[in-house]
Length: 174
Image 1 (tube, one colour):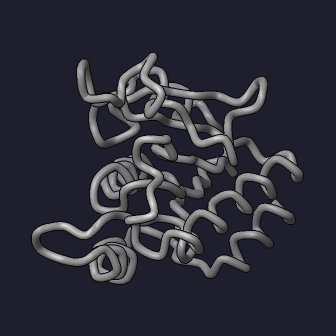
Image 2 (cartoon, helix red, strand yellow):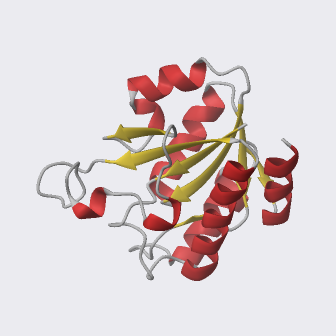
């Protein structure tokens, strides 16, 4: 199993995210559990382009300190919503024997959604732990409705939705 951490960057991790405190606590705890149990953690950062404030070299581009990558952990950069848009990431993931992918991070309705669908199409078993993806309110739905819509409806047949406790147990028992 690989724990895939998407876009947990300083410019996106913000108190305006739906269920912010719980979301942050859960994602940090899963990263810690994966590291403690020798489960590979792979990070992906979104590069939104020049003058966005979210490109390589910008402070907001960096991954938050609570889960900053450790030496030897892979970090990939993407410029589109799906992590699989990065050729090196795609090749790395497709070379893995274990096709279980636990996905956490931001934002539910953008990069998480695209990556979930791309992973499913490539034959990965996608695991989504409860409360470990989030987003902001938008013009159509508040953050809570958006998160529930994707987790409970859009991905219903694509992912294995598990409780947070089940996710921790999966990381501990691999």
